[in-house]
Length: 197
Image 1: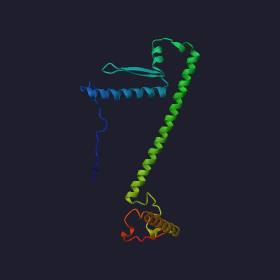
Image 2: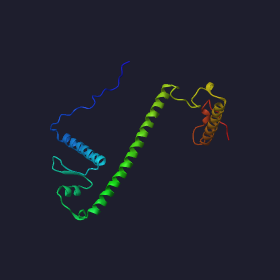
Image 3: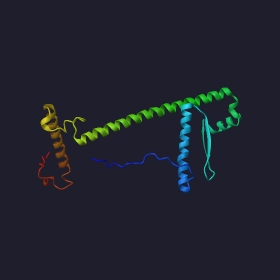
Image 4: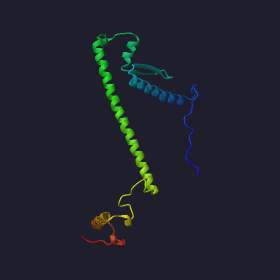
């Protein structure tokens, strides 16, 4: 049997040329700018590099990204020493503190990624169980005692079914008796006999 699922073209190579439509150009600029920021952040995280960049939009608006701080990157680039940077020991302490906080955030991020992967695996397993149950394949999923045919149940399971049905009947009758004053008489239901409490 032929598959009728939707076929996609996958990733396409985009020709590098100026985008003529202003709205499309603005959207592309925004998406690519965040992509560049993400790559710079990954470079900082994986290599401990110091990164500074300035991007100007077509309207001339500047966007900057700097780690640890844009000012310190600019000062380092221009070989200026401003304020606290004259005391090298203090600067080393501040840099160590920043790196420690970055490492803590990276550890938290990695832990959350592991939890996300575990939840994705759990979701996939639940989908497989649901699919196996819907297909009625008992080899992949063992049915609960309440779902199996009565002739396949053991004596203790039959006792559970009987007590569950009795409790359900009692609760249903109690509910119907209680709501009898508020609604139409429940005796209109031919298969249900109500016992007054």
